[in-house]
Amino acid sequence: MHLSFPTSALAATAAAALVLSVPGAASAATATVTDKAGDIGPGVDLLSVKVVNGKQNVRVVTTHRNLVPSYRSQAGGKVFLDTDPDDPGPEYALVGGYFDGTDYILLEVDGWNTNKDGIEPVDCSYRSRLDYEAEMVRSRFSQDCFDDDGTDVRVEVKVSGAKKGGGMAVDWLGTPRTFSAPVAQG
Ligand SMILES: [Ca+2]
Ligand SMILES: [Ca+2]
Ligand SMILES: [Ca+2]
Image (tube, rainbow, N blue to C red; front, side):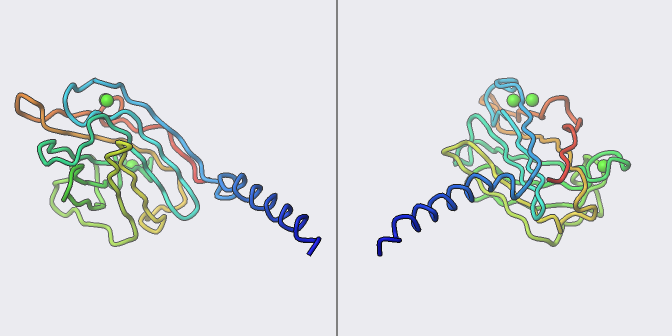
């Protein structure tokens, strides 16, 4: 049993090495784009968007100010994904509500209009989770969702929410209808 100490020490070292190597092993390319704070006043202010383009999944994490469970926020957002730079505008859009009881759906789109005729939901593995505590929306898409899987991904995000005095406030990531720099698959 005198071997147990060196063995467990070795195991601990291996475990530590494993933990440290996870970001490298997954080798996902990551980019974070920030948006101005307070550029829409009351509403679900968008602060940043993180994109991780991994082997299996594309993940998009948006960070907000005023992400709350109440329906009074009327908050929601669209995460536009561009997987084909030769075709203008986004190829996909995740459309979802940002308060309790809302749902989300991934659509195959042809441009920025998500209400056009002929737009179909994508049948693939994806999910989106609201985290009010962290004020984040975490979305994950299997690479299988995309026709051009394995290519660079560019994003644009548009969020909206109720203004105190009525009407809706809209906050785009940076310049409206402009994609982030491409994030290559890691
Ligand atoms: Ca903002
Ligand atoms: Ca495109
Ligand atoms: Ca903005």
